[in-house]
Image (cartoon, rainbow, N blue to C red; front, side, top):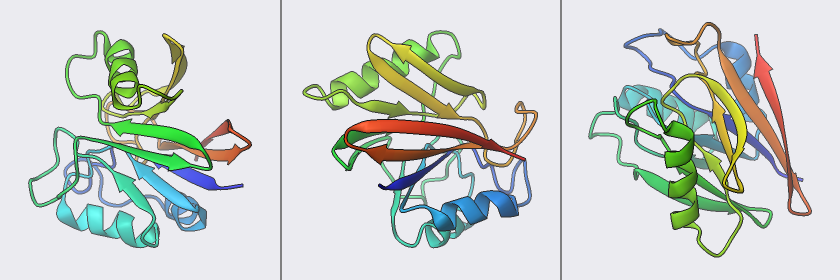
Length: 166
């Protein structure tokens, strides 16, 4: 059963200095890492990629420099479950709906899991039949009040998600 680490909004170095050790341990333990954008620097992207041991799906956030060459939206299938990843940039109003619509349009023939960031708020909601996950900020970057991430396990088409925090 694949173990998937879901992170976003690391903001290193503009808002936080480093990714916490406990987050690094979860990234290294995962079979696959999904990062929903706002690394903030090429160096932060490269560090996250090294922790992921080459098993990284990442998208561009609104604070990411052009030297991070990742798409704005990406889709990966893990154990038969499609994950659509986007940052969710834009107004905070309507964020859940916007993310669900991106997931539906990116995987129209499936029941995708949407993974997004941007708000720094932990979310696990169903919007128009799409499960929308926001792992918050993996470094606790403001406006988050603590570092958070999700660890998902995928088995027989089911996705179980556990929130991790300090």
